Amino acid sequence: MISKSIAQRRLLILWVISGLLLIIIMIARTVGGMYGSKVNDAWSWFMPTILPTLSLMVTVATTQQTVNQKSSKMLYQMAFALSFFYQLLVLFAILNPIPNTYTPTEMMRTSNLWLGPIQGLVAALLGVFFVKSK
Amino acid sequence: MITIPRAPSIWCGLFFLLAGCAANDHATRTETTATDSVAMETSPPPPPPPPATTSGVPSGNNHYTGNARIRQFPYPAPKASSFKRIPRQLLQNSGTATTLGFVLNNRLLPALDAADYEYSFYSIKDSGVAVVTRIERIRQDGTTDMANRYVEGNAYHSFSDYMASLFRAKPGYYRMIVFMLSPYPVVQSDQSMSRQGSDSLFARGADRPAPNMESFPFSDRYACTALIYEYKKPNQEDAPKLVTPSPLTCEAHLKKAGIWQKLESIR
Image (cartoon, rainbow over all chains, first blue to last red; front, side, top):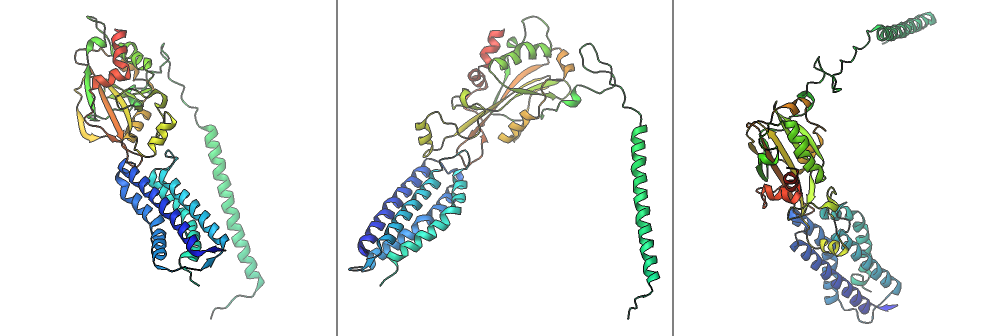
């Protein structure tokens, strides 16, 4: 078992740091002219990939009292690992390391195929720590 | 109420009637096929090929009329990034009469071959020739990107170049050159040609000019005009656009391509 507040804090740190990193990369690519006339499409794709989850986590972490509550360590580890994996996939979709196959926005649209289900799983696991209360 | 005939003889009669029709139909079809095969067998043989001239090019009954199989270059020419008349002294020996064939085979095409260009030919109306080069990737300064000359998409020269391209749009520059040898003034339309249009223009051209045109005298009425079509693809998302006017002059483009120097040296 693991303290729920510790689990929340660690997951929140992971999401805040990776979220900020992804936002910085998006800004850098936008300023660098990577999206050309499709800059709105790019940001419209990016916003729903991290912001809903991140804002929910921040809200719950700052309002909910979780003192003396315990959660499954395995669930915490799964939530952490899957969150990390999800952020890596988002990074992959943003950076588009195979530019001659997909344009940046094509890559973003295509990545929805795998990001959608994984985001659902991540949200479900994070719900254990940020929504469920004993 | 509908009554169904019960007598078996009626059904049998109906059956044989239908069977007879089908058999007739089959026989007619077989007959038609046979007639066709006979018609094919008894049709006169194809006419003999026209007599060949000494040069090997058929002549006489208009099987090959020169211009007929060579497509016409669009006239007025599509809007170009820059253009220039090539000085006559680069194309002919001073003081001697020459032909279009000489200008092509002894000046222009050797210069293009030396610069390793691929090209195709068009006719201009009934007495001109256009030489269209394959669109190539160039650097921003106009020099040919030899390593990635015909590579589609982004080209990377190093790992750091690749890493930089993840954060900064890497514009692609492309160029097509058209030489118009024509007695008509070269005028350009207001409409620009897309990059795909340039690809298509090269691909649809002939591998040689119309042979009858090579004997045309390269008189004072004729001029050779080079048109540069330069394209810039600003990023991976947006389509390439014609750069007009080009930041480089036509002569600078031809020098960067190595064509101008070759024309001078051949002379």
